[in-house]
Image 1 (spheres, rainbow, N blue to C red):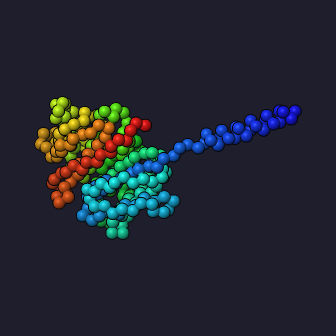
Image 2: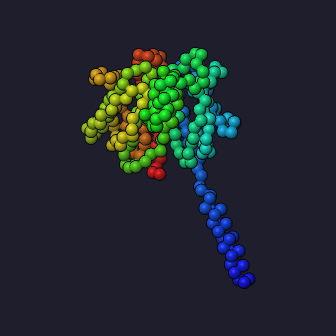
Image 3: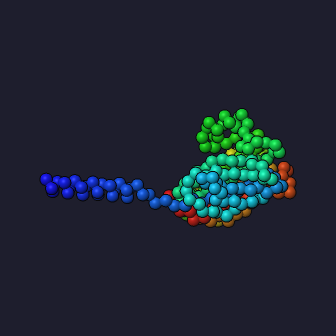
Length: 258
């Protein structure tokens, strides 16, 4: 009888130990950066809050891309303000070992309330993914991009985002200068993003056309590196917000496979 009591006690202790160890999962920090594409001559103050406390504060001007910042994984509130007026105050989730670009875009309008949303935009939120991406009357918005590199690391990965408020659809081409390969860029409306494309590394020409015609409105000539994810944001020129375009390049290298 005593043997069975000791055996039962040992099994209970071992079961509790395995249960406790099984609940402990390795947790890594998340990394994020800010792409400040809200069209304004005034800088934006971007803050990240966790449990009501600011854990990140940075002031960025239009067209700026911050460096990556590490924070613990979890739920945060992202707040964007200028001149004491809060434009956006939204909840976001940053996953363990994740890497993100938080893209702010749109046209701030004086007198608009925080998180302003048109009726059409509210309806679009019922959809998922890029189907939920809507112009929202060109008002300020947040787009969260996953920067983790998946797949064949002998290739580069490329995507682009139409963040030029009020401009009609854009399309284009990617030309690998060495291999003479050409890939067409499917037309995108504001503020859509493309899917990720596998591209051969090396010298590359990328250009964008306006609407259905072949007139180039933006062009870059990057040297793409293997194992690197590139995001190209089509945005207005700093000194000429409406009539001219530029390309903001954001790269994320050596992210590995998950």
